[in-house]
Image (tube, rainbow, N blue to C red; front, side, top):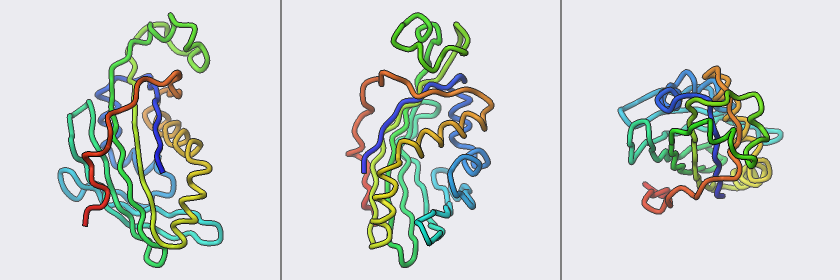
Length: 190
C-alpha cells in the first residue's frame, strides 16, 4: 500500500515539529494507541489496538526515525507484530515547509477550506509519502480494510493532530510535487 498527502497547518514549523515528536500528543491522536514512549534518541516503542471486525488485537512494535533534519524532515519506519495475525511494516517520509498564508488567500485555487483562516501569517505545509504492507492471513484482511478507508483515517489523524495543537488544518489542494522516494529506506530490516 502506498499513501501520500499534504496538509496545511496554521502553526509555525517548529511547533509542528515539536508536536510530531511529543509522545503525549501522538498517544492522543494515533487511533487505538495504548502506549508510545521513547526508548532511545531515535526509537519509539508503541502498542496499538486495531479493530479487525470481530477481533481487536494489540500490535506491539518499534518505530525508528532516520534521515532526521530537525524541523525539516525525517523518515519514520516501523514494524508491528500481532502474534497470530502476522507482521505489519511501513515507512513514511515527512517534510515540513514554511508557508505564507497570504499565498493561500491570493489564489482562487485555494479558496475552499481556508475561508476562516487569517489573511496573512505563518503556516506549515506538512507533506508525506508512506508505504507499507502486512503478512499473515488476518493482517492481509486488515490491509484490505485499511486500503479502502486509508484517506479517511489519515485525514482523521491530521484533524486530531491539529486539535491537539489547538490549531487548524486542511488538506492542501492542489498537492505540491511528490516527496523524494523512500527507496533509501529499507522496510525489510531484520
